[in-house]
Length: 73
Image (tube, rainbow, N blue to C red):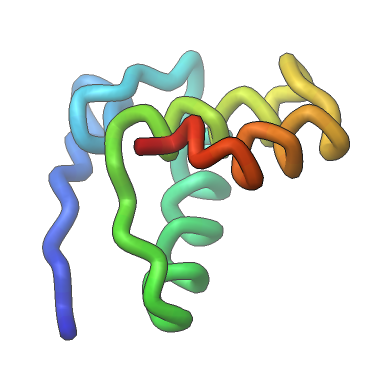
């Protein structure tokens, strides 16, 4: 099922989650879109986690732990 997510290119935000630059926001949006095809339903917390991984704030190992703990809900 199609789920629309709010992307604001002027404010550099996805579902209210802010990004420091357009390139990072677009990379994150592409990752989210790819995962939505597989059934992922994004939440603001999930977007924050993906953003933090993309910018290197958290490691892949930490990202996986958060995913297993369902910290994205």
